[in-house]
Image (tube, rainbow, N blue to C red; front, side, top):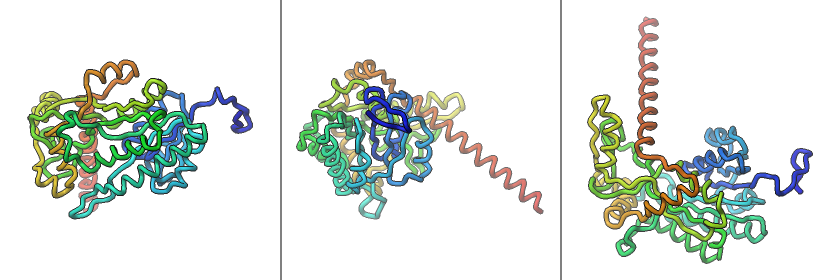
Length: 345
C-alpha cells in the first residue's frame, strides 16, 4: 500500500512512475509532453536546473514532478530513479563549442552513459524497475560502409553494448532516431532556413532519413503501452526519407502561393568540418551509407502503436508560422520605438 496525502492507495491503482532524464532537452521535453497526454503515468522529469524556464514549463503540466538530477552525478540519479517503474534515458555529446574541437566530446557522453546504465542496473536489482528505454542513433543502411562512423554515433552504440554487458537487454527497448528536422535550424549566415532556402549538409540527390524530435515522445509512449512485446528490441525510427531536392520542393509547395522560390542549399563540407568536424564526418557517412530505418516496417509498427509521424511539410508550416510571428513582433516593436522617438522630439 502507498500513502499519499492521507489517502491510502493500492499499488494496482496508482499511476506508473516514469523517470525521464534530461527532461528539459528537446527529446526530454517531447517525451514528457507526450506522456502527459495519456494521463496514465506519474512523470518524474529529471533536470540539472529545477528552476529554469523550461523546467517551470514542464512543472505546470499534469502529472509531472520536477526532480533535480545530473547524469554526471550518480548519487543524484540514484535518488531520482528510486521507485521508478520505467526509465527513459538519453545522453548528449555536446559540451560547449571550442575552436579546433567543436562541441562534441566523446568522453563527456560516455561518462553520462556509464552512470546512467549503472544506476538503471541498481534500480532493476531492487525489483521495482520493469522497463528501460534508451535513446540511441540509427545504425547504417549499409553496414559494410559504416566506417568511419561519426564519433557521437559510436558513443551511443558503445553505450548500447554496455547495456548488453550488464545483461539489461531483457528490460530494455532501444530507440534509434535518425537526423532531426530541428537540425535544419542552424544559424550559419546565408544558410538559415527560410521561405527561400532549405539548407542541408549533404548533396542534393542523396536520400536522407529525418524525424521530428517530438516524435521520439510518441515512440516512447507507444512502446510503454506494449512493454512485453518491445523489450529486448532495437528500432531504427524515422519519419521521412527524402533527398535534399525533395525537401526543398516540399518547402516550395508551401511558399509558392506567396510568390517565393525555395532552393536547396548545401553547406560546404569544408566549412562544416571546420565548425564541427564530427558533423562533417556524419555528412560523409550519410552519403556513403545512410541511416538504416526500414520505412515500410515502421509503418506497420506505427499503426500498431498509434503513432502518427510528423511530416516535414507540417513541421515546416509550423516553423514558418513562428518566423512570421517573430518578424511581425519585431516590426511592431520597431514601429513603436520610432513613434516614441518622434514623440520625444
